[in-house]
Amino acid sequence: MAEPSSTPACPSSVPAHIAIIMDGNGRWAKSRGLPRIEGHRRGVETVRTTTFAARDLGVKVLTLYAFSVENWKRPQDEVGGLMTLLEFYLKKELKTFVEDRVRFRTIGRTSELPASVQKLLRETVEATKHFTEYTLVLALNYGARTEVVDAARAYATAVAAGRENLNDDSWATFNRYLSTADLPDPDLVIRTSGETRISNFLLMQAAYAEFFFTPTLWPDFTKADLAAAIADYNRRERRFGPTSEQLKPATR
Image (tube, rainbow, N blue to C red):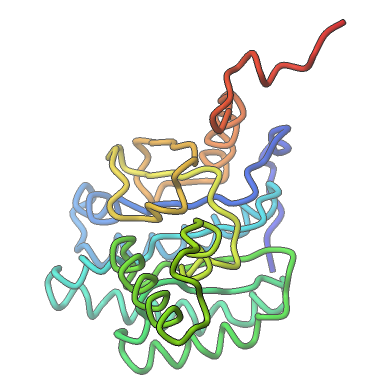
């Protein structure tokens, strides 16, 4: 079950959907003279605390960039260790997800993950699919460019089959073929570790998102860090096209 926290109440306006690029596990381990896999192991613990911290603060959807399509290029032993940690995480958290009514989702080419991981992912998704209050999304073997390629292929197939009209070039139509079709776009994207790039993550969905970059390494990321990011988000003016003057309430 989620543990109580002494963190102050959440800011006045909470993003409905927060997406996080979890970065810095390797540097965290290196700074302590530990193997990289220890940083990833500590990062898994942060995934758990952040999952429930976000819900406690009022977030409705949390998306975590867990494994990119580019991560296969890492040393084989590290990739294998990450898959083992993912299996351990899924086995350990399933009961908690059910008890705390967390809907678990994935995005990415999960069919290319090891068969044992795929099985656990399917079981976790199935066991939690009926929950509606809070959703945790893991981006696994995910890349925004490959997502667009997959969506374009699916859309072209639908057009060829007569299910879509080629002349319908609206974003709303194409969006239905993205892996996040049933989710709101992220309001806030956070990246840890001090890097200031988005690394092929939710490029289409984050078109109007606010970004927050923190030097904190992912294993050290806390509920207070998350609350600070939301507080910074609250200081932004989100206009979506109109000017500041247009958004101000009319005065008599």
